[in-house]
Image (cartoon, rainbow, N blue to C red):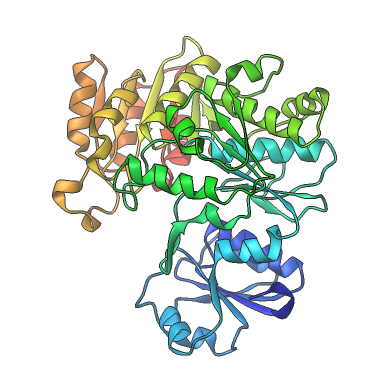
Length: 445
């Protein structure tokens, strides 16, 4: 699988955000790149086509007739998929995306892995930009789009590869977390909580996978760990490398253009890491000052009739709490409505039934939509959104369960007034509710 022996690469599931970014990077390096997917539509389809990458619709066996020298199988693909079955039947050369990233891009660089349940995308984006603004030209792979770069991945000319270390599993043939593949020299470990209920049975299982990350850091390496998180302290206790703890005191000398204590903590981790990589306090602050944010992280999608519409990826109860607090800090004394779509593999389940109600109740008004992909879950496993709403109402807050975006808009729009903030929490498109709400407000203005 060594990159120097490979000339053609085929990506099965190429329209995933990370897959598309890495496919484009392979094309940039001169590889012949093809791919297939069942979900071929903009923006990923146009992004790939603009880079000269041919996309095949569906997962047919014939997609491999051109005999690519390496097949990259996305982690959403399962046994029974025709391309997967042909790959196995004919013993074709295949790997997971994290394996390809390791061999093609990370090996030979100083690998900085940002891990933890929350804040990975923001911390990775912030560190990559701080290094970039200091002239270090890092390579990076991020599970979001930092607006400073306009892309979630890039090949830099510098010594560092900064990567978001996801604890989700690697592929159907490799159930280890993605981050164990990334040859970590430096690790930022921000926090550890129970999440990903579809693959982890409990918090102990989550800790176990983070211990695997700690176990592959070399003796000369460094773990930058959140001293305020008991689970983090427990997981790094057996580290064979140097561990440097951080907390909010490490942020005291800095300022960032991001709201919320959680972002101050993210920035503290970045400041410690950047300092360890040789940057001065002035260089770090210059990077913070010029950081412009990340799409889908408290992103202002627009304003109409005096109402501000925010888009945010938050779906875990802790992330919802921290984001609502940050919104309150940024928009003080303004009425806050939260629209929540239970769409992630964890929030579709009832594991956070009580915690979701408690976190959403921090808003002034709440709308909860139907649980996504209900047919995939047993009734006993499903989140009960009506119960979430009932618990919020007990706290004296207006809350409604309405199945879809249209029903939510019909109820919400007449209640909005100048100065309101509407925060839309979903890890998906939520039926395009952001633009539909803006259109409706403009029409009524």
